[in-house]
Amino acid sequence: MPTRTVFISALLIALGYALFTDRVWEDYLITYKSSKNLVQGHGLVFHPGEKVHTFTSPLGVLLPAACLVIAPGGADDVALWVFRLLSASAFAGAVALMFRLGTAAGYGSASLLALACMTDAKSVDFSINGMETGFLLFFLAYMLWSLLKSEQKSWLHLGIAWGGLMWTRPDGVIYIAVLVLSTFLFSKHSGRSPVAWFRLFLQAGAVCTVIYLPWFITAWVYYGTPVPHTITAKANAVGSLDFWGVVLTWLRVQTSILMPTTASEALFMPSANFLGGWPSWLPRVSASLSWIAAVAWVWRGFGWQMRALSFCLGLLLTYLTYFAGQAPASWYLPGPTLIALFILSGMLGQLRYVSPRLTMTLTAMLLGLGTWMLIEVAALSKVEQKLVDEGNRKVIGEWLRDNATPGDTMFMECLGYLGYYSGLKTYDFPGMSSPEVVAASRKRKTIVWDALIQELRPTWLVLRPIEADRIIRSTPQILTRDYEEIRVFDVSDQVQKLNVYGQGLLAFDSTFIIFRRVAP
Image (cartoon, rainbow, N blue to C red; front, side, top):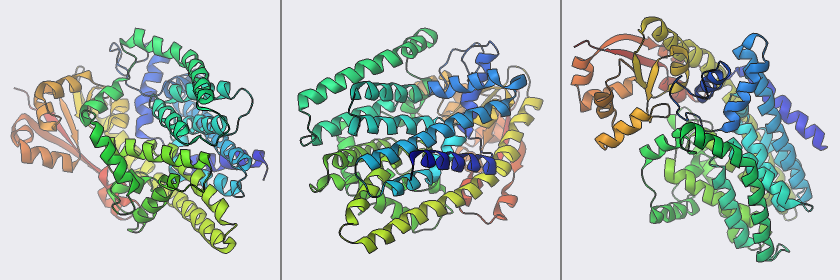
């Protein structure tokens, strides 16, 4: 199968998914608000006049701004589609690079690898819904190709890939660090000495520094720190890093087949699967596939490249599990999934010499699972976009815009649609757009919502029923004395009539209660 065919096939799948679902992810609107403010002359900020770094990806905010500039009449939907085309092309480039890498590695299953990558539901979804995932996957695939198969100027290719990862998302440094460590541990038979590897990484690091340094300096000068406030807010909610806790988490990942209580369970699952509505056997299948890929490094019969990537995968799952438990945010998973698919396809490529029939069976099962999940996730995403996002969260944002007064503030968790369409000053949890939330949590030494609300005294509260119940059980006077219920936005009846997998995700965002602070 020619590489061009792989690229075109992956691109058509991604664009077809976009046309069918018209998916606009919540976090895209968080970032796009800063993009739009930049184009309109307010600066690269979420709230005009407040220099807060409310986005994570430099590419994810600058490219939509460029798309908006070239969009006729500054049309938001045109800007989104241009960005989708760029991101889908990056995703297709990642699949094509993985196919080339599998072919160069001598995999008889290079086509399987390409098909598995282009039918991974999370990768396709987050490559067209406004997130930066397509670019992350491209630079990750480029890094793997540069490290494992590039023969001429591999240091230059690797440095460009590293720089691209850093421009895509600051946690790209995690991918770089764990892959460098894994390479040093398993490269004894690579044909390069440790000194040669060190020299290669040093040269690539210099290239990466040259590429990323302009943004690093710009962010530092403009915002007063190069660290995105999104990272500061999430780190404040998670807590401090514990070395032995990380070691214990790594051991849990290595034994996840026995106790699937790690991110391994989510690796091959749909987005937000922990909310329910999917077959009960799916988490066990996902955990098993993840475990096989994450412990392949113990078998000495595999090549050093596969063992290094397997160890790297285990470290990435440790990172995700430590900070997010079994339920890491879904957009963090496509990168580790790409590595896992490379390992699994390589294992199937070797197994075919032992048992061709078993290999064909396992291959059909892997591709069948991926294709089925892609179809079901597309059906879920289409109704979520129409019913929950546009039919509920967008409507709430517009209602608040029309009913609030200048100077009003709002506290809620889901920042994207509500913050974008309401135009209000937002106190979101955990404070990605709001240094006030982070400061309040540190002052109160807690991240409990009722304490934050009492400290911040926002004008409006937008709460899911489960969130309101939690506040009432803890501090009932907040919602019975300090605030009054104004309106309920509820599409749960329509959700219950749907016949789709993943209804837990729809139900979670189907009902919101609006509270307004009682005037003293």
